Each structure stands twice: as C-alpha cells, then as structure tokens.
Image 1 (tube, one colour):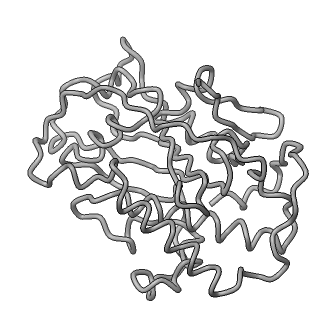
Image 2: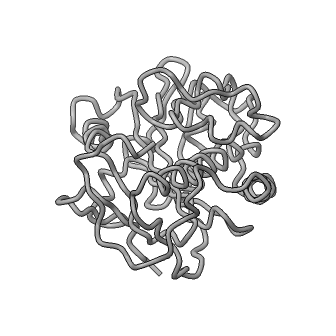
Image 3: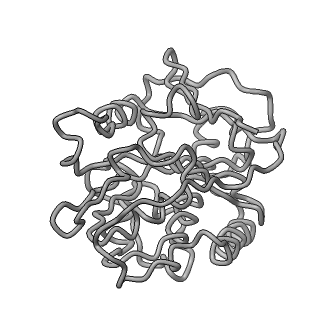
Length: 270
C-alpha cells in the first residue's frame, strides 16, 4: 500500500487521462480485469509450485533468471492523486497483490495472515477473496512470510532481477535460521519502467533491512529481507513481474531513485 505517506510527492509524469471518476470501476469491468490477471498468472512458468514442500531445508543457491522485457506502453502512468483516482489506484494495487499471491505456493501461507495489505479488500468480489477484509493491523509490507524450508528463497533466486546478494547464496539451515520476507508490491497497468511511489517508511525499511555484505558481523546470521515486486501490464493478458531482492543493493544499478520526491523507477537494461 503506498498512499499513506502524504508528505511524499509524485515526479512530474506524462499527461494521461484520469481514471473513471466513480469510486470503483464498473463491476463487470472489474471482474473481467481480475480474471485476466489470475488466468495469466496461473499459467505462468514462474509459479512457485515447481518447488515442493519436501524441498531441502538447506539452500545452496541457483542462477539468476530475469523476466523477459515487454514493449513500453505509452499509457503507463496512473495520472493524478485526486480522490477519484486514489480509488482507482487502490484497485490496481490490489490486483497486483492478487497476481503475486497467485504466483506463490508456499507451505503455511494463508491470505488472511500473510497478506497484510490495507487494500486487499478491494478484490473481495472474487470468490476466493469473498470473506477477506482489509488488513487491520500495522502494515509493514503487502505480504509477509517466514521461509522455513527455503522454498520462497529458491523461487526468488530463480526469478529475481539482479540476482541474490552474496549472503543469501551461502549454505543455510532454514529450520534453524529462517528468513522473514517483506514483499512490497508496486503495480502499474503500463510498462515496468514507469516511475512508482515509494513511501518514506518503505525506503527506510529497505535501507534498514539491507542484506549485510561480506565481512559484516551479521553476514551469516541476518534473518529479514525486503523485496520489491514490480507488477506491470496488470490490466492485460501479458501481466508480468520484475523482482528485486534487497533493492537497496540495486539502487545504483537496476533501480533509480529520486530522493527529492522518493519515487523510483526500474532501469532499462535491454
């Protein structure tokens, strides 16, 4: 959720039409959009069910595999931050989070406990989310999960952009030293290069949870990791994700931050 830091402004964006002025999109249009997201996600090659719950608790690393880049979309940006468009942004954000959940198949994961987003109720018109309300606790990240069997770590290693930090590539007994992941989902109906809003609290968490470098006292004992998932083309059948594990490490290579307004964008490496 990225609408709760009013002091952070937007970078000037290309002019695009504002979303519909109604509080939500028409029900039929909403439902159609969600179905496109879910269907596309369930058929994607990177879904986590390639990893079974019987996987070894000790992880020994795997190569970096990036998502394929898609063509730029000139209608990428959200538009203004008017009350009407905020409702639209919330809906788009919730769709991106739902897309991410459909990618994950994790032991012990439940939508009620691990999906800790204050906007998750925006998609409760879907049968699988019918009884889901907005998260009422303190939101630290959209999705929070403790990896005790290396399954999420291995999935991230296979699909992240920029690879895993060195400390995460070392042998690790996840039963004895699990990793708690904070997954922050940033969604756009357009291309992944579109600037996205990063709240001041989110940036501080990203900085505080930076994975220690070689030689640091906590190099082999860290137990929390921040992840940004950039979901793009969310309103199309080409919905996809770029994943950045320990994004603070990637701020000079794969991510570009505007510190005056705390916005960020993905660097194009094509």
